[in-house]
Amino acid sequence: MAGDLIWEGVALACTFGLRQRITRTWLDEMAQNRWGLDDVPWDRIVPVGVDSGIVAVIKAAALVEYNAHSYAAHLGKVFAEDPSFQAMAQEWAAEEVQHGLALGRWASLVDPAFNFEAAVARFRDLYHLPQVSDSRSIRGSHSGELVARCMVETGTSSFYSAVAEATQEPVLRFICQRIAADEYRHYKLFLTYMKPCLVKDKVSRIGRAWIGIGRILETKDDELACAYHAANSDGQAYDRTRASQAYEWRAFRLYRRHHIERAVGMALKAWGVSPQSTVAGLARRAAWWLLETRVGRLERAAV
Ligand SMILES: [Fe+2]
Ligand SMILES: [Fe+2]
Image (cartoon, rainbow, N blue to C red):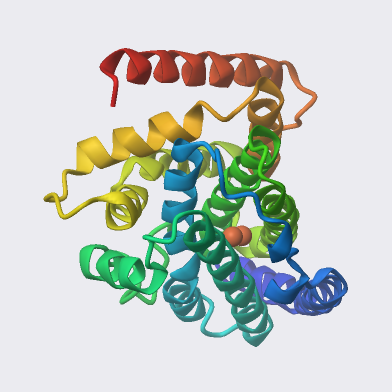
């Protein structure tokens, strides 16, 4: 027992420098890749003929992105004794909020009836992040929290890549290409930071896969459904199943096989499974089959 504690102390001391190095590298990378709303060529927007389904999911995405500071507050509590991580989490949240602002502005230009601020207020009334008041991660450890973050960044990176390829609207394509690159950088950050955390947490591959699958399934919870409803409803009462299905149908049909295969590779890497393994090949095929089946069902249900 005493031996374990000594080993844990040594391991933590050894990872301190590594965590600081990751922080410095990431903050440098962020400064090099920084873009702002003024870099978006707003005057090239072509608002006519944009797919209404894409507009609807972009409005919902704008609200979730803009709410990132609530999640950063939660991360700040979970990593309360790690100032390096807290510094990164603040910068990370600022990038996510900017994603929300860019998408919200684009949606308002394409659909002048869309009031971003009013939609944000409706969303915040409807949805409250469940973990914000907790100082312990519901994932059980810092590594578990980072696996969950990797799943979210995998999902957003693939979603914006899919939108960028699906849309003909040049400004939305410009914005989504930049956001997809940011999300991939966020994924790499959380993945890299997980390595020193795993030294003390010792979460197995199966444990990481379990947390990851749990987080993927949570995409069916209230957050996206509430955002979709707040952004797109015309005063109807909130119906979670209906809003969730409406979002899924409009978002899932944008994906192509290569988006899903890349997302599966990213998720498996976070679980410690090689994207080149036989398991990875089977997982890629299964994920694409699941997506096609779900899209078919939603299409038949005409949501
Ligand atoms: Fe984002
Ligand atoms: Fe992100």
